[in-house]
Image 1 (cartoon, one colour):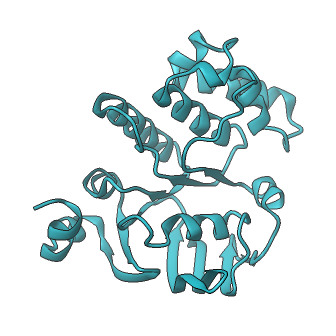
Image 2 (image 1 turned 60 degrees about the vertical axis):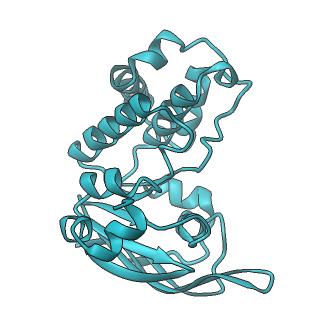
Length: 236
């Protein structure tokens, strides 16, 4: 069953066509990687899916309903959450306040408390720093917080935009281990990531995006062994 289906999506900034008729499907319970160089249109695609950008044309269907152009907050309420590029945590709020902000649309107080405890179990570092302002955290800790904040909305679909950006290799591994755990718990994931090798090793299927268009789509294992992908994105 497809949880997310994108058809002929086009996005433009002024006179620049950033996304040029993209088709993409994410099935319930899978992790899908979207890889490509800077400026390929990956972030724009995620912003359109999450309601931050209005597409010029095309259709976005989520859980069987047409959500093209829907307001971002309504999509959060329906179980779609974005971890944005650059983390964008609330720097003057504490770690705990940031996490609670992720649950702003929920009314199940007991469930929110249980999920807060779960975030602290998933990210012990955040528990240690729960009363610390988010702006004083390291880049890796802020990335943990951004993921935790999104998970506090109890999403069915989690969109991740460049979670490894600017992080040391050890922290990248920790973040990806966490993403793997989240997926194993049943959250469907669409992962945008410049580290193509890690993204494809983690996911079941992958799409390659170049200059606003999808140029390849296949099982991740197939893309990992594709000579074109290996040369362009794996440095081989």
